[in-house]
Length: 454
Image (cartoon, rainbow, N blue to C red):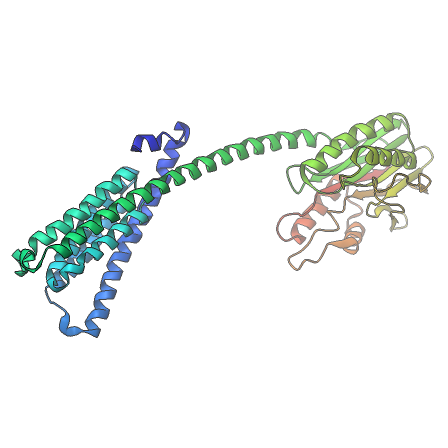
């Protein structure tokens, strides 16, 4: 296939980047090939000299110096290359230079003339498969090696007195056949390799393009999802602050509050099992379900019982469940009713007593069973200045480098130390402490929902 035909397999929008990748690869391979050639030559020559010093020919010394100097020049030229074309031109120069050195060394040792073809064949394979050539370029490189071998045969008599016609042409004809076959094999293999490289490159770019589209979609979905996070609010009855830190673009944590009337505030905090898109979709469905029931004035136990029916009906068999804590503040009666289904214990801090009250779970996750106990609803009085601290389990399960969890003991100590802070500052400082405690990224979503009662 023609070179143009191969390049046409790359969409035009990707070609410039493909050439850039090729240029970088060519530079690195030419540099490596250049260094390895010089190192390998001096290493093999040194071993041969120490093993059989009598066979060493002093005529090889100038060639060694020429190889070293030529390699340095090639390295300098290669460092200045900025395009695939300039890189390949440098590679051609180096190949011609190496062929000249090899031919001259073979003339220094004419006794091995019949075996010299294997040196040319080795160099051919090394050059073809170490640098990303196009198939037609492989054909040209093969011709260079064949030409160098023919020149070597032609110069044998002039430089060494070795008459090929007198000793027999058969070994050299066979050697020429070996080089021809090697060139053909190199052409076929390199053609398959470049087709695979192009296919892999195009596939990679298509995957990257799809990933970029998905990333943008996730960023947009994240912005939409964050609209569900309640905004901070301050009234003459309560100060409310919410802080949400998802572990991924989207998460399964949810919190919301709703004023049933002027004196009653209904609120909920939930955590759907899992992470990512599936949990976020449940949260979006849950938002509509909560809003509708909140407007209808449901009590916490009754509301969670109905949300359980919703989870069982719509998500049965998906292994998606929900932990939830729901509460109702009656500012007129100074009473707080609450219900906890599978959620971590939430806290009320009483300022006058300087004491923390825990609201533990007394029922299963929502969605596990077709029926829950709506009567698992409790009530407690509150006073001015008291704080309610709500959160999801990502807070407790934050891990340090030794995989120790933050845990409820550290959280309760934090509440005692920082109980005087306003809700917004309280949430921010707790998140800072979790960031300082954790190792790596958060493994679960973090939702903090704090209220100060006035």
